[in-house]
Image 1 (cartoon, rainbow, N blue to C red):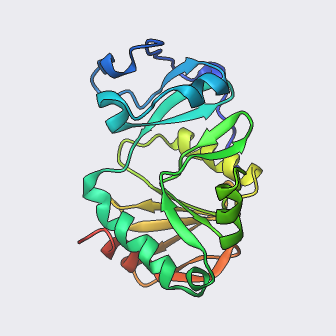
Image 2: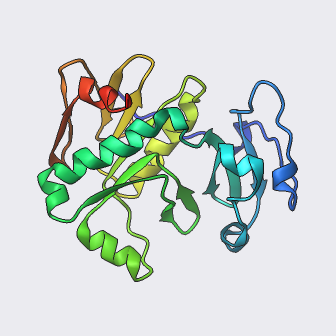
Image 3: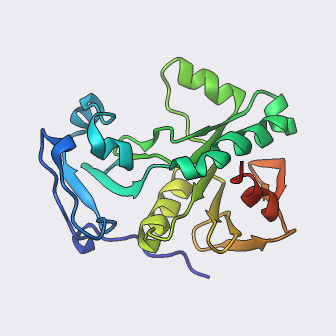
Length: 220
């Protein structure tokens, strides 16, 4: 299967938000998953407090080639089981015992012009040390938990971004269909469900969970 085409900037609907009053934005119905974005420099993006106001409580802000974008909601309280149990499962694996850790919603700068915020990512002990001294390591393993509102083009573009930056494996976790799609390249996904074993190979081959265990993790 060929990789999905990158989404052209000109094809993306644009709904700009005010430059200084982010927290006062009122969203139209339905929620604008087609994109909310604003042109700004990386310096401006990094200097803004994105944790302020009701907008920040709902949406992830990423940086994409000169634009701040809100294309995806942050993880919800209903997904807290994933946030507790997936990192615990990784910690119990041989990779976790070697110092690797799984984090959620961390800003990952894939390049100087592109920052993505995956739902989950894994850093090795060496990468954690690199981050502590101010470097920007790119994780080899990412997990995205999909919602019914997600846009396929948006996640296709993120797959291209991830693998172009050196990511080796991405899980797309689909709670509605209870299936995990494991990507080792854009457009090369293997569907896992039930007792199928999901691995993070080639990045972390000894981290393994049945697909059913992934979805059981969401149920506290």
